[in-house]
Image (cartoon, rainbow, N blue to C red; front, side, top):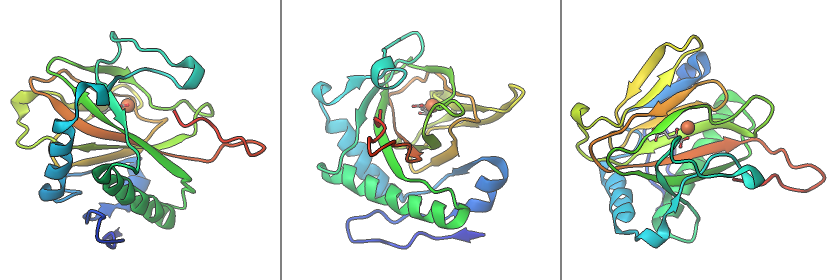
Length: 218
Ligand SMILES: O=C(O)CCC(=O)C(=O)O
Ligand SMILES: [Fe+2]
């Protein structure tokens, strides 16, 4: 079954349909034109005008286990928050999607965190899982791409691997495309590209707070 997201308010982006049956059956789904290019361009332009001070070197691990390791990943990131208008529009859109996923697949997703990512030419992110079974509350990964006119020859593919290490998908980071997958199931990597590559990566999470102490988000 396929449903279309209702528009939640004027500021929210209008999104196109996601095939929830496909997500349920294979654990991932790729939606080529999730968001209309005009909205995508707004996010792309916003990312372009950010300055060096707005970005941080991406790291690995969370909270006290956080380290930066440029042999593993070389992107720069910026966590989104609702204070900046284009960031809020994206967060609203993904909140809307959270409610849809819970309605369609009963996943009990509790919240969402996401960051912009900038991979300069040559930057990569080696094979990894976003979550380890039982050790993370990250349930569902979303990656949304902002890059207009991205060509095969630009590289920068997201490669998604299956259980036996076989390549399931090679995804070009084209503007408007959304990829959703189970965070603790699919090993994936970002290949080096020829151009600056912009995306928004996020995670829907379960609530693992204990005695009212909320699990750290990052
Ligand atoms: O940008 C992508 O295609 C994937 C990024 C990723 O794997 C991550 O940030 O964990
Ligand atoms: Fe990842």
